[in-house]
Length: 541
Image (tube, rainbow, N blue to C red; front, side, top):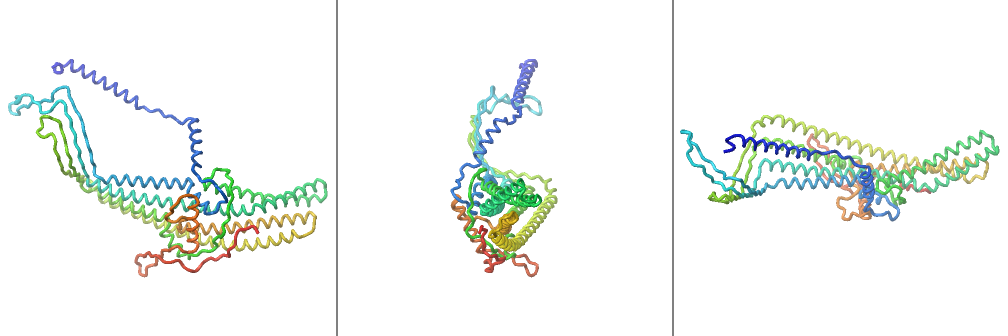
């Protein structure tokens, strides 16, 4: 009655409003967040912890590092490859989550409710306006409810199914991105290894000739101070010696730079000392024809496979958009419980179906179809552009290998001549300044020529490896049982021997005779060898 009188009810309403305002202010104040930048101590601590994690759990270097071991260490410890592995693992976990979305919903609910008075009601006649029944209730003041219901929305199931298929394609695409990282890392490791190993083999000769050049330079400076030779001749001698010293010091620095790059690719700590083991036998021939390499690249390159998986998802997106236009049917069934004592049945089971359909969305059918066609056209054009790029890379790699073989033969001939000139000059018995200059110059020219020959040999190896990478030959077999460095190096060596021997099964894509679609098949590799090179090693002899 107090509420009907007016004043007490309004006072309670004001108090309730005031309490709500205070509670709202406290809630807003509690949700206010102040940005807190990282402190210098936190950054230093995080940097120290990250630096320790960079090189944790790595197998130590126990001897000279071969090319296979360098590749194994790079593939196992390189952080870029680790990132690609983590991305693939994440996509697989997302696939598990997407597959779980296909299950129907099983929801259980339970609750308690109480009130301070009885929930009662009466009725009034719509004819006379008088109360027809006295106030009554059919609900207890304290109630307990519970239910367990399983439901399945057919439309959501279809969308989840397409979504799971799309996530499966994204998982496969992540694996192809990992393969692409592997091919890139292997190409970089191979280039750095050959640059470093050829420089390391030449290091003793560089140090010897550099010592002779510096000694001759000191002799020239002493002759200038004592006026033993004409000034112009002494200055010309010093200039020639300084040029030789400069060239040899550049060769010395190249070794340190190449080994530092290789150490970074293998994820070794900066400043780690290690030696390189020259390959016992280096490949100098290409056992595949150019059309064979093109055929392999068309089906094996990770970029092509990734784009094909993306094309699948383009089709799935169009199907999902069309599916959303259909009516949605929600199927449900469950068991229920209510503690209300006025109910005849406190527990029961129910089931049903509910259909909803947004008819206005049918107006977007032409736009959805046009969007799907545009996405498909874009995917096909992008795939064709990618295939053209890959074909160009394979052809450029093939021409690069041919050019490298020719340059290697020319550099080997020049090195042979320079070595003979140095030997003839060294056998001379003259002791004057000019003969000493010629002797040092001939020795430096021989070293530089040998360095050029070794670089040409390294370019042959790098171009051959890059050509295999452009064709999509993986450095690792599909299945590797052990993941330690020794087992990985052994697997890489076996895979390399298989590729270099031409024992890889090659896909052939014959051209259709009358405009039909090409068909893919497998053929054995050709028996003939192309671009044959004399099997010479980049030694220092």
